[in-house]
Length: 136
Image 1 (tube, rainbow, N blue to C red):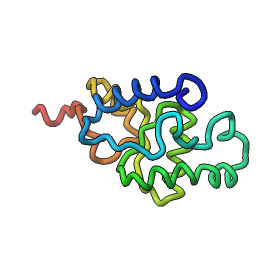
Image 2: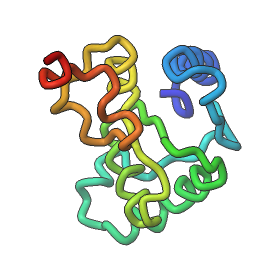
Image 3: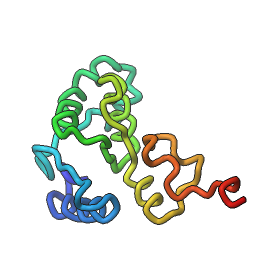
């Protein structure tokens, strides 16, 4: 959406949302970024193509970009990016947690259900989750 169509204005809108959700102090940008950012290599049907090793080799450019940030999480806006970036984390010894932007939006609103926390790290799995045993 940013690199191939709407460009930097949309990238700025997404950065605004992410900063509002995670806090300015937790926002770590990649280099290069915005419309010059690297592709993850999972879109356009490549995830389902059966060429896993080729997809991972191409995606290593994005993985190296993520690793350079030293951020504990990589936020992804779409399903294809999420699946590819999560897979690349596994290939790189789980160097980061991968989380959908949608998941963080719902977590920040306090409406993310317990069964929707699969990709959250241990530090976020219990944020705003009601535990009936704690009310006793």
